[in-house]
Amino acid sequence: MFAASILMLALLDADAKKPAYARSELLLEPADLMKPETANKFIILDARGKSSYQAGHVPGAIHVETGRWASAFGNGTDRAGWSKRIGNLGIDTDTPVAVYDASRNKDAARIWWILRYWGIKDVRLLNGGWDGWQAAGGKIETTDNAPRPRKAEPTPGSQRIATRSQLMLLLKAGKAGQIVDTRSEMEYCGEALTAKRNGAIPGAKHLEWSATLDPKTGRFKSPAELAKLLEDAGIDPKKPSTTYCQSGGRASVMAFVLELMGGKPARNYYRSWAEWGNDADTPIVKPKK
Image (cartoon, rainbow, N blue to C red; front, side):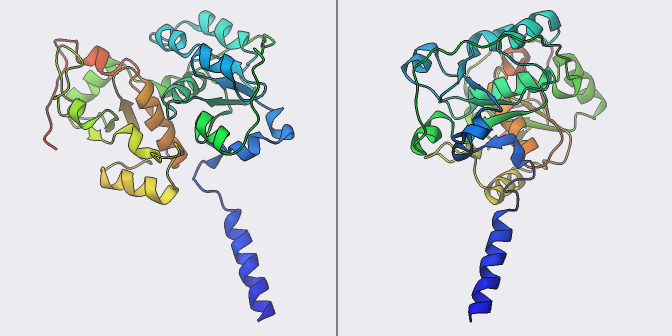
């Protein structure tokens, strides 16, 4: 009986050490970030609004202006500008970075994606974000932390971005691959008016970005739950994918999830429906759900 108990404990311990996701290193748990030896390795970015940051944040966190980053990204060619933005936060290509927000990763994932696009090698999302940090009993500080600028030499990752012209050519050739629409069902079906023309990119699979998160905790759903969600939507994380939404943020969450589940980096059609739906020449369908 004793030997059987020891064996069971050993099996449970071995199982606990298995990675929860195919790419579990993309996530950082609040309990781990609470450890000084872990926190000291990272530049921690707070992607919430400035007033929220000033009211209280993760110790050592630096505020990042998500709105300005979102609009400044453009088509991803301003290497000099992004060298300055990234370097001013104390980040270079080898700096480990952790990002969190209070909007169910929509803003944090955008920052994650932009940094990964510019070649920052180790960028992670704090699982559960700000709410997760508080729920875990993490300490809170109000110090406005000033970064120590570094020289950053970012390199754009063309494999992480899709453009309108690329998608148009691939669609015409029947080689667009797996396209994932991460917007709401009403947007996907063209019932929500978010542009001059509404609907979806032909052939796009639909999975709303928020479905990948636990609605109560804001944490990513379990590997089994995510696998079922993707399968039910007809999405294979191992296939080359392009994600899109309205302006790149929600698409960044899905790009993160696909990579978390073992897929290669998805292409984010960053300009998304704000561009596609306002272009008179793009093909559009209105799927029935």
